[in-house]
Amino acid sequence: MIAKRRVGTMMLAIGLAGGAAVVSTSLPAATTAKTPKVKRVRLAVLNDSGESLELMAGTKEIQLESKARIALTLQVGEKITVINATKNYKAGEAWIMVGNELNGATVVVD
View 1: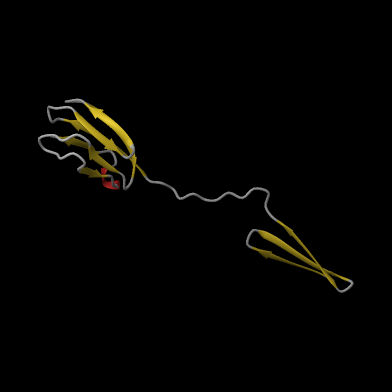
View 2: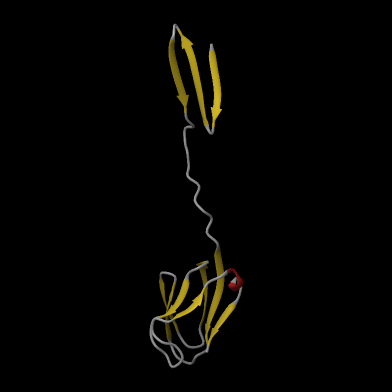
């Protein structure tokens, strides 16, 4: 007598032969773990402050000259932080928290 039962993605077959149980399992050849999908946001930063800025966008340092514009792609939840102090911003200040609402936007630094 052979009993087969599907358990998740594994097939379990049990056969009874002469009073002894024989167990056979077969697993899929390749199993891959699903990684969570990361939401990315595209935005632009325009430096309209009249002075050069050093920013940290996620894990990247960015030098942004006066009147310059840069396009960025960042993950939701990452921050854009001011590295060097300016007349309007303190060094280390978290300037922007990236969220879905910023997708396609241009953020102007004045």
